[in-house]
Image (cartoon, rainbow, N blue to C red; front, side, top):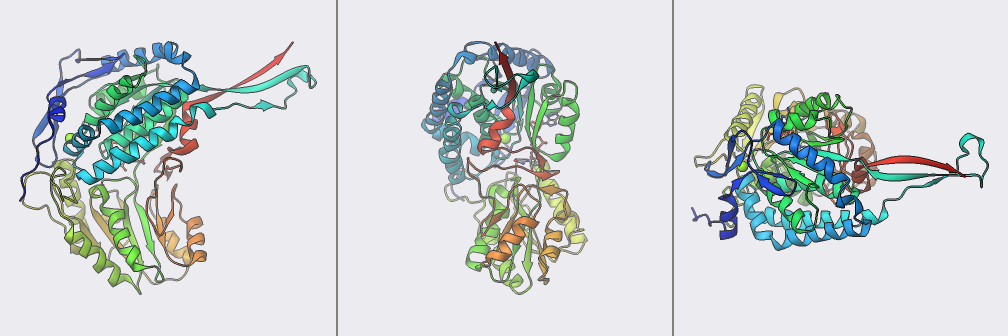
Length: 499
Ligand code: NAP
Ligand code: MG
């Protein structure tokens, strides 16, 4: 085994801080003095300690965010908000090494993926939203209010920031999850209170500092660390919050909706998935095999878009299963900081137990374990990439979101596309999906039949800042990314004037 490199001095300095809450432009501890530990999932070791906030800290942060709505931030021109978003992108790139190391030791992803995410995905996303402030426009409306004739009145709309946004995010891919809320909120002129996942809060904390360094005024971006049932629940219920932007499980999504009902907050939800990958016999297997492996095993399967249900036509079934299993067996498992690691740990021991439980349930229900299925003997929360063949839609690992590296394969012999789509749609989720074929007619019919917010053809989970993304059915409410991702952060005021 290679010696795992030690993070750089700036990263070690950051890890060693007494991490508090970022409220009104400065770090402060919890009133209660309560803390929680942050662990490196590749070793199980504690790497940082954070203040655990609750209702008191959330209340302070919401007050700061409300006050900031009418402070200097409200006098920023659209071009100035745009410049701030560009600056955030530049500062993310300047701080790349530290952000990557923090993301790797906190969430367990391999370094090349962290470099791609922090060096490309995040800055490009901020630059995309930097383009929006100067293009947020209302409309003139051909109305005749109270019988006024043309020339006697004018009616138009103003787009205004929705107000104070409460953003609650999960631990898988922590920095992009926070970016998805911060960029459109700032583009629209909102203020925010972030509650990052307690399992991986580090890059969110660095990002709020970067926002401040980029010229965002005090109180515009606030962050409260803590547990979901304390800090998260207090944020979702707070009457001073106008909108909740939540990413996480479907189960917690329901709790958010209930908590938000008090003051009828606007709510957007990005929830779980169980996405189908459908392979037709004419598909290019040289594309399909690595594509299907990546669709499931990217981020160790801890990815809402993961293609975890592989439907393969029986004519090519064995070749596809063997090919994907060969890739899974060859993936180099190891800590993200080790050069050459391709497959990191799961986020926690509890998550590893959960994944192992789904594999055991699949075995007991008659699935065949083609590869993986075990936790390797080593420190950290690793679990081998696993392929389960001969699965059926009623089996536990096929029905439920595992959020781990377990691919469930089902063969189909049917040439009736509606029947294939019915199987692909036989889940409560509808987030993503992909179709693999060289036949344009098959592709276009399947694209229409699959009930998901995103369908890709001959690729899986094609993400771009400009492309709307979100869930149908119990995978969510609303869309992120693109112009549609900006809309939930705006409200419309209708104005009519006469003289
Ligand atoms: P989770 O358990 O639902 O937690 C998400 C966030 O909600 C965390 O910050 C959590 O705090 C907080 N939370 C927990 N209980 C809460 C409550 N009662 N009130 C308010 N907030 C509460 O999800 P997770 O395990 O972190 O993440 C995995 C899930 O996220 C999967 O289902 C995955 O599919 C989904 N996801 C969806 C997308 C998408 O775009 N659709 C993207 C990524 C992930 P803690 O810090 O205490 O956990
Ligand atoms: Mg962690």
